[in-house]
Length: 561
Image (tube, rainbow, N blue to C red; front, side, top):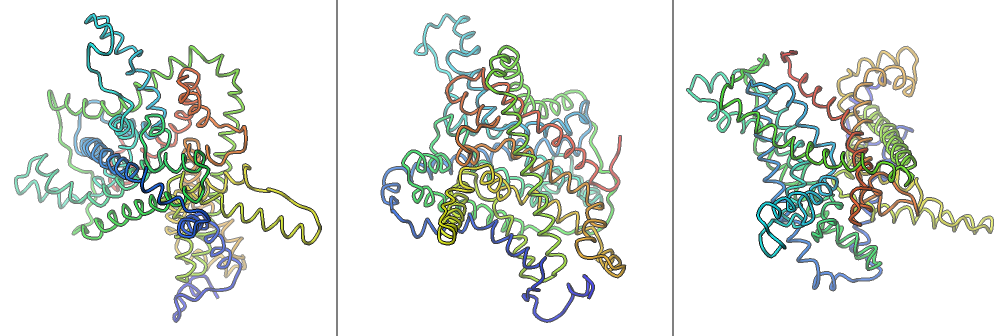
């Protein structure tokens, strides 16, 4: 029976075929969702209950700070991302081609790295306050007022600077997908540029904007470095402190369950917004979009609008860190910098390769089966991306500990030999956490690539005697090479930046660039952390630029110039 025939078999859509691909897909999916299940199980059936203590002492502060952080970051990224995306897409002005890809560069800058740089720039002993005291003759902090960067407002500003590219990226994709007929209709009705934006472009792009905001707010919930450095008590910081500070894994799981509720509400709001805001094209005209030629003051305003996020989100922190890196590179190199780079690159490459292989297996298994059970299992395996890193670390440690105990018990019973801890506290545990966390990135890219391959290609290959594995190797993989490369690059960059999971799950005395930068910066030694922080940033620049170019070419009829 061919692939398309098996997929189209009528009858029970929930029936699962008991072949290696279908069963393997379901088993892999169950393994990948086990951390989330473990969190919920420990939260509702704890071995020790410190929940009343958490409720009476810190829960209210965690909730209020997390909500305030999400509201502030949401407003900041909406303003910065949507405005720049519309100006870049719909207007012509000097430097537009440069800003088109450059506005994505802050995405490569982790929020905690930006926080380190701005704290050093704006603190009392920093250059700005020192210059102000020299100019006005102030002798102490009592003589003047200066905003404190280490507050929740400062955290909102730092995260908005590096998370607005999520909204910019998807808003621009939404604006690029607009039909010419709709825009021409708005012009015929006498709408100018700004009225067309509010009445036509913005409503049409609203689903894409909602997705961008949701993704950025999930990253906000995941942040640990910035909030911990600024002493903002959010859920992520609370989970870390409860686990390691109070030595209570059940308490951390209970806080994690509450944070998961935040994430589910966020996903529900985003899906509801898209469901109630559906727009359908009435024509297939996707020629080059009309653009407004800006000159004089308007062109200058457009340049300023696009330059400000780039300057504050990348240029200023990179300049500060670059100066420190050059001045202190010998000290950093003597702190096993080469080993840090090696650890980070190997971990990131390993996670990217594993995520790609598992995503290939899951998507191809779902393609071969065609059954609802396998397809649902394949997609449900990507749920880890919606779970903050600190929460996922709590969940990962429990199935791994169960595995170690089970193997040890079996080995002791059969051979009288205790195996001890096999996976816990090892690189394998860390790689498993990375794969669970970033599976959605790889899964989405592979799913999109395979969906463009017609089932008749599978039929032709199988009729020529090729097995399912041979068809995947000889037909599908060469055809989705671009999607596979994109998936690997994105997982690599995300793993390089990941901090909370690495801090909680890494082996003893094992550091990456992210943990090294965090440890030194949290000890007020930003100079020693600068080179490591810059290395993380530059590792992500290439993929970000390639992503921008891919978005520009995504519209049929785009202008290649």
